[in-house]
Every structure is written in C-alpha cells, then in structure tokens.
Image 1 (cartoon, rainbow, N blue to C red):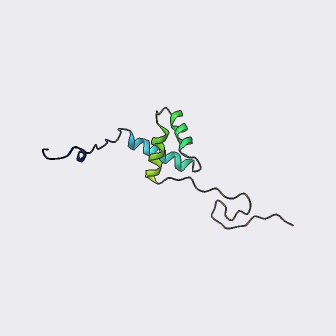
Image 2 (cartoon, helix red, strand yellow):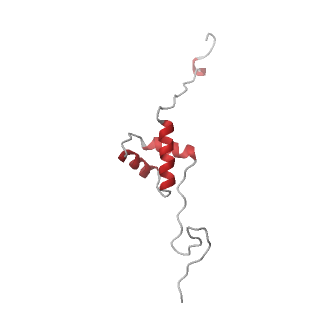
Image 3 (tube, rainbow, N blue to C red):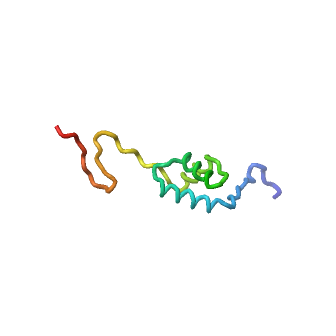
Length: 92
C-alpha cells in the first residue's frame, strides 16, 4: 500500500441484498403492464409493501433495457395489436 496515491483507491459499492429479487419483481411488473413507467411501477411496489426509491427503480429499468413502447398515433393508425398493418379510415 505504500507509494500509492489516495485517489487510486476506489470505493466499490456492494449490491443490496434484495437487488436480485427487486429486479425480478420489476421485470415481472413491466411485462405485465407494458405501458407503465418507473413511477407507476414504484407505486405498485410500495403498495406491495416494499420501501423503494423511484430513482432506484428507474436505474434498474434502464439496466434491464426496459422501455415504455411508443404510443400509436390517434389518427391514421397503421398497425394493430396483432401486428397486422391496416389503415383505419372514415367512410366517405
């Protein structure tokens, strides 16, 4: 340890004990409710009795690659839930 400068000694954060269980629960909620963001999922977790910070939920969602899908435009929809491509128009 002699001869090393102080900034070279880095702090390595230890992962929380419940990190894996929380990640699995967030992934489950995100797959069940695809349109819900991190705030709504945080509310669900708090209703289930977990004391969790919204910033932690957002960080886990980003790490797992979970994103809210883009909304369909209200006019001129080009796709449906089954993946078919049908344009819905008014009859003139």
